[in-house]
Length: 524
Image (cartoon, rainbow, N blue to C red; front, side, top):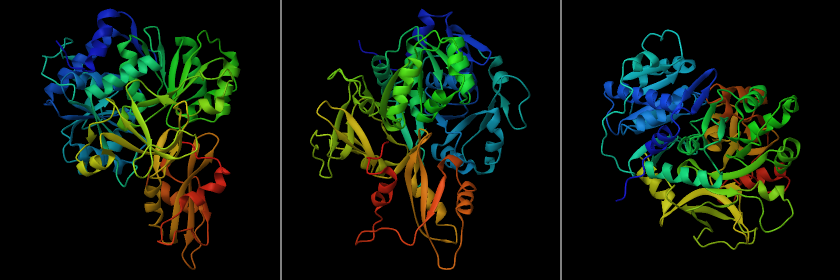
């Protein structure tokens, strides 16, 4: 008899096999798998007591923490839908997402209660506000997480009928259009992705993962189920810091981590890295944007650690490809290993031209990456037209442009929608342009990604000023920082007399980017 693929199975398995093993390390706190399950059960009962019903949305706004990890399983086992928020967004973005998703309960880290209090008046569906903190009194208008769960049973709530195609989470994109889109992930999506991560990243019961990526990130929650299911240990990193990273790797004997290129740079440039006695050989996976090939070589040559590159999107749960060491030649090719790699197990990948025909596998011809797999999302929440545009003829059209070679290696070269990936975060150039156009001195503008040694790429604004205007670079950057999340803002501004356009008036961004990339294909 077949049983549905439900993500709660991962925690249930490890509680059965490894009840006394350390499941999570958060600062000085440690919880075994049995203790983690008990806390998850109490939170589930607490949410039910607040009136959360099957299908209701529960949001969490928090840095990495044991609270965040508990929210994954506490919501899923009662059939609720988790909505993880990107804490780097501004309050207006949070307000939009909470209302768009129809969130009933918000779980918020103590650092962000002021942010939520500032938008309370505009929230249309939220009934309860819960603050996550290990100790202390809850602010006015908030319920303390620990007090809320204290009197609840530590046994599992009554079983409910669920299907593997039910939603487990709605994960909002960073805003590749005017507004973030809610990506609907099912139990089946997340379950199959966990299997893929276990296989390709060789996740095992003795793995200790250091959480450098935020758990709200697709490569964050994508790994939660894989590590839990195999009985590994989650080591929480609240904020990226070189000294703390090496301290935790040494103390906890970390074996695995997934990160953005900027974190890899932090590790490589940490001046005291060789003073630490690292007993393990960690596997470091980089996602979001490929790091420079030199970073890979340094990681393996200087530290003796292992590098793996993966590629995927929020809409694909996320793993689509993985870059393995080259089995076709004995020559170590770090440039090739920085590419997206080959399709993962269960992924049917195509690179299609504008007429939806496969491009030749010559490593030169560019097409759009399209995927069919059980990890492809159910659709965009309350956005059927955008869903129909993204999923056509059974394939999810990623919007990423790539070439592929004779060995089926995919190399991402550009984006149809000009998304900039900076430090692993997607940044929409039209979003920045919309803000710039509000400035009275701006006549025309275009935002492009330019190379950056630390962040991979950062936004650069090219601006044509109005006659008689005299805005400065500093002024325009500050103007943007007042109106949007700082990581989305331009890091530089260049003034131009005009911008290149086609005969029909379309902006030619490729011409603007080309000088900065010196003829190389833009990574990402």
